Image (cartoon, rainbow, N blue to C red; front, top):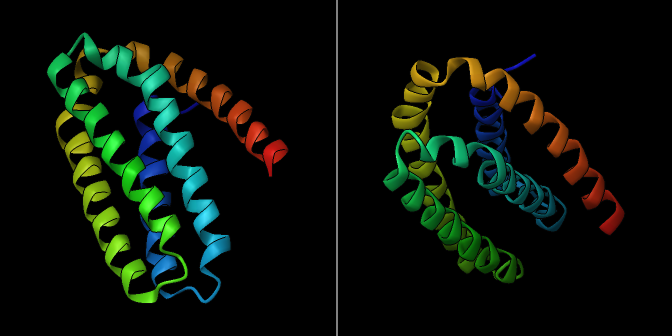
Length: 145
């Protein structure tokens, strides 16, 4: 079983790779759907399960992280809207990538080590909850597709 921090780190890696692939993809729309799904599911998992635990450790950070999620969400919408316009798409992709990477780096450098130290025994339980919720959310995405 994986710890919450390990699962979320895997997600981060997956999102970074997808955005990188999106840059050179011919069929952007299909890959963009994947990007959207990954980002939205990841945000839901963090907001529902991980951030409530983090709040005990660093409440102010959680507030700023929720703002960051909101920004990423808006940039994702802009990117989806720009899919037909090559130059605008490139610009929006750069913005999204920049925001996402800044948020991910902040989380992995500042929060994950604190969580590992302070809530180590909780992270396995959180990990299994995240795994379960991910399955449910992915099922919802499949049904909606």
